Image 1 (cartoon, rainbow, N blue to C red):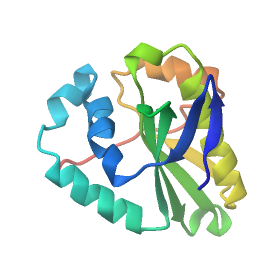
Image 2 (cartoon, one colour; image 1 turned 90 degrees about the horizontal axis):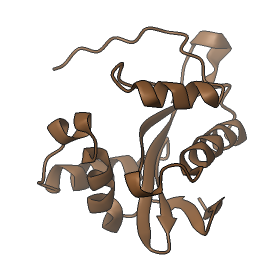
Image 3 (cartoon, rainbow, N blue to C red; image 1 turned 60 degrees about the vertical axis):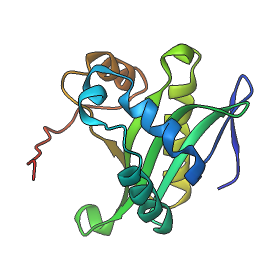
Image 4 (tube, helix red, strand yellow; image 1 turned 45 degrees about the vertical axis):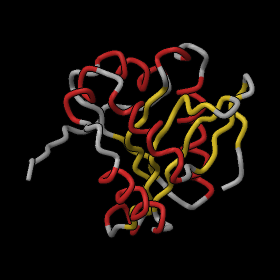
Length: 155
């Protein structure tokens, strides 16, 4: 992926291994993430290597002059449903608290839809914790529809 300008001098680019610490910091920088993420980077580095090696997955960061201020993962899932449609799954969307309100999250998600369309996906989906009510309002404002109830089973 080539760099994609998001505005205000921020670019969206493919994440590199040297971005892992900053990405984890963004994931941990909220009430839910603070209880889930750990300080040990080794498991994140291993996960990054696995994700980065698979062409169906793309980890990206929003880079503001060398500082990572946003991140997300875009995954492409082939399936039999919907006529054998390819769908895109967005995960781990985070924008640094200090730069929220500048339109970066919206630009990141619009890029996801454009990239999914470019790759032939017919649907882009994401999940968000029920407790993230601000995020729900944000996604709805961008035209995303809360069409399904999600279930998870911790293993």
